Image (cartoon, rainbow, N blue to C red; front, top):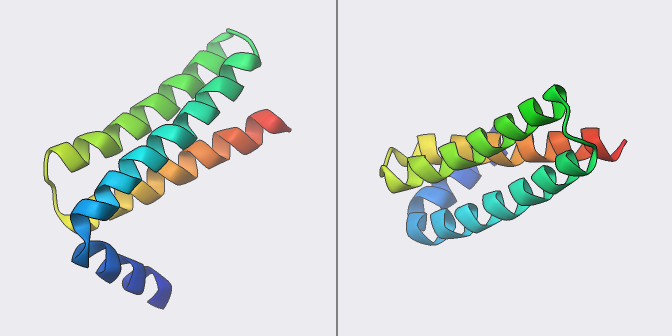
Length: 93
């Protein structure tokens, strides 16, 4: 929990820079996940996975654009990156 608090404090202090980097990172990792999902085929399961990745990544972008609280933006960045990484790992196996 100390690591989370320290990262959140750092994110809060330099919000504009980290939010910009977060948008780039979330979009890049999400696009890799989308590419790997689409390489597996076009079944309903794959399209549902693609829907989840795109929704979560766009949700993070929306939290930044809506200027929500810094903690909410930070938590949505974590969820976005973890979701994309989860689907990357699932589709590489």
